[in-house]
Image (cartoon, rainbow, N blue to C red; front, side, top):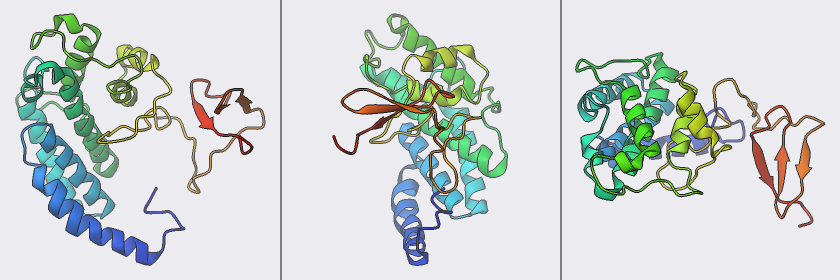
Length: 248
């Protein structure tokens, strides 16, 4: 979307591409992508996103190979992620924090090359699905978490983990993913280090924006009352968009 935006000048695109190459890839993604824990997952995801943007197929495929290795080595036979479950009361969150960039990187692999790591089984029998299932089970049953007593879980307003399973419900026909995400829908999660920021409006089969970045609103769309009124589209009842009235 960003690359095709007609309002972006040639000079701006050139400057950004230079920053991607000389700063983001060279000094950020490459610096952390070989770490064995979630740092490495974020670095790999970042490198893949950058190489995809730069149309660098060779290096993108190298990073897909790296991601294969991370799936094989960081996920245990039972679906746990030992580097993350060892993080005390943060074990659940760090497991999520590793799976978010891994799955987002798998999304890039599928989008860019057709490589489907969501259905892939590694040489050691490891899969993304097994790690997602492990995480979801203990998010629902934190009292059974075998790695720490009283692990941290999302509070009543948090979106972490819900964003992940909202996104994954597009890749796996798993009603448990769908029902878990539905508890917090519509999900928008922006801020520091989040891979799935707008998982509800980017679900497979839903198109809200065209190439001109305009939301096509139907005539029957309405504004619900409130301090910040909420735009609701009847065809997509679980999606709402905060709107500040012009005269507010």
